[in-house]
Length: 278
Image (cartoon, rainbow, N blue to C red):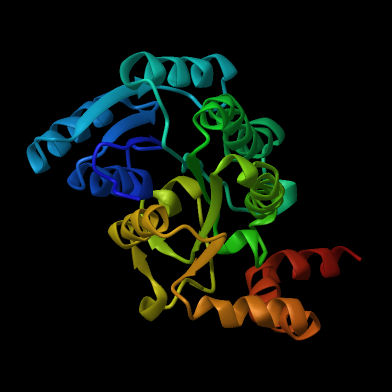
């Protein structure tokens, strides 16, 4: 696909991967719809895109993807302005990482499902009839390695990303006859604001190895490549495919290693406290 002039919606465009992705599309001369809650950041990004490529157009839409009315408004404003939707990048999302019993039932658990799962489904549902009418379109869902390999403290976030994986796989097989592609992209660790908002506190200091750490720009470039050459799923960097294989085929080994090297050291004090009371 020639990206210049294409109408592309990017949710969660105010920071991180969404911001980098929108910038990449703007550089290519696309008509980019910037959607997120923080409208001041979106307006700043719109000005930056205009400076990068004078043929690029932007539309700023303030939207909370946990609210159906905001999603409906996003699609309506896009159609009013551009009259079509060529690509939808479902990127908006956040994580709250902690032991399940310590997560708040509403602000941590329900809120993640509202944005990370229902936001993706409802935004796609609103855009899909337009793409069916066009007989063309591309839906790109930002998954995560957590959607393929679930690790401790990621219970809810991983559940959300696994849900998006299943949703995307089924949808791909539903809509292909209308000329619509559905892609899933699975980045490993990315340098963004995610960790700060997720509330990560680890005694073991376990984190993604620097050699496998991505920048938001690298993920944005990968999204642009997916639009040019669609594929069902893409794990980046490729080295994580070995971890996925291990998780599927040697799950007992992965369980034992994870529990011994992460779960027990992280929860050592709690385990001792319980043992002391028994």
